[in-house]
Length: 129
Image (cartoon, one colour):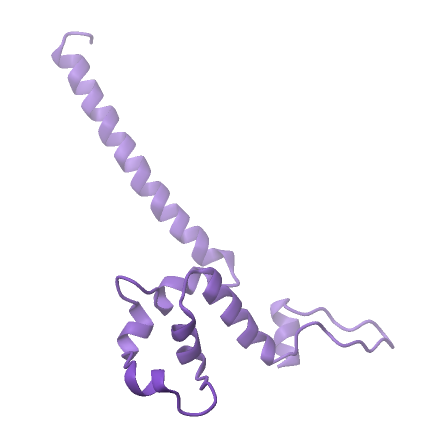
């Protein structure tokens, strides 16, 4: 795990001769990262708890009565954000976020192009060109 964190740039190599505890434990840090960022992205606590495999004090009534399907955890529903809806927030690389921004900008550009085409036709029809 340590080697992976160093290679990905999530950790820096230790300073020679200096041993210090880090703010977040190596493996537990991933769970903290997931929970924090899933919550920031709008995912409900019950979904987060289920995706992490947590049980609150053993078998809980919500586990027995609240039957959340795997598909709901993945895709969400009209009231809850699913895993797919928080991928951008969980992604360390900017590549996925930038692809999303590019797609949104391309849609906006096509809308503007359509408006400009309509405007040119309107100007032509009223004799301004």
